[in-house]
Image (cartoon, rainbow, N blue to C red):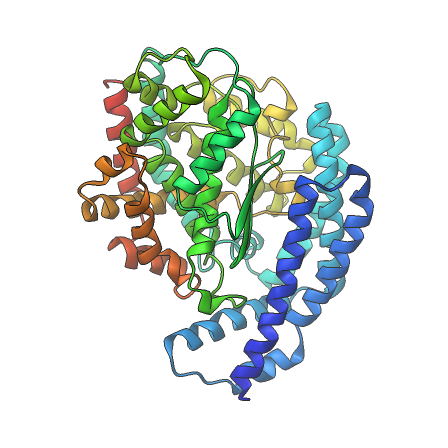
Length: 489
């Protein structure tokens, strides 16, 4: 056994334990009894303690010094293990354990506060989370920018300033497009109610239509849709509403994009640093291109219109063209996950600015609700009506995911670049999608991006797959063309 072999064997065991921790999180969000929350917090803290000890084990440093692989894959493994190790050893074990314990319990507190519309009930535990994450960020930053250190967890080799520059390029065009669209007549609306069991059956069909392998995955319900796992166990959740089936269907397609990325990675990388998506921005590029450029296209919505008509009968939409406009309707709304393509990134920019301010100490947790409401009113032109439509709507801050939000908008930027190239590569794409056949598009993504997992750095894999340096122009051109045509701008 060489040092590299020893390192990889140790890494696979660590990754396997990480998958177990992830499964505990899935269980907590789907089927865990509510009363089990205190014990689950202790369980999560215990496994995080074990993981932190393994990730900071002095033997890892020794193996890294001795290992000298000559092939591209081996060098990439060393690069990612070294990056993770160097970050882990900066964070004290007691701090990592405390964060795991508090964020596990905070998740349940957030869910109850959201249901009760009670911000005050959530703020004390959020204060704990923010304080601990600031401490972690300071340890990681080593005198540098705390927020940059947090972004590194989700989008390696990217800084808050770089993200802000991209957002500054996008914001004026998004605001102008939003104003122009909202000045036009609104599309038709769905009418009636939609049986939730029927929604879940069609949701399952949509999942497999987009290539989700149910032999190594499953679809469940949760308060907040998410995807978890990698390799041979990749799970997604969705949610239902009797009056809004699109919430269920497009949440499912979105999460399948994440899951298909994980299922599409070369199995030779399983339980190694290369065996998962390389970043949350690249991950989000897959979920957003599945959901929007493919799932909300005129061609695919024609197929979906027929499926929904067969499942639910008449639901108030006259034809496939009207259905396409309805699916892509731009409306005032509060919820990020339900936002249309025009307004979605504005929701992310709001959160990005607020969490940067929280981590810098420029915004206090006690002032968060007022800051959110003020910013929302300024950006969207109307007031937040209740906390579940405002600062309590997302789970991310309760579980300590600071630095995560901007990757959603980066994913849209990356998806714009990929889609531009994908369309050129598949001239008959619309014909395929009109038949409910996504295999050409999803196969292209698997071949050009998904199979590589973490082999290449985030911006590098987007450049390799799309042939262009990542930037907002392809996304903005796509949005302006699409919604200009729908709304006759």
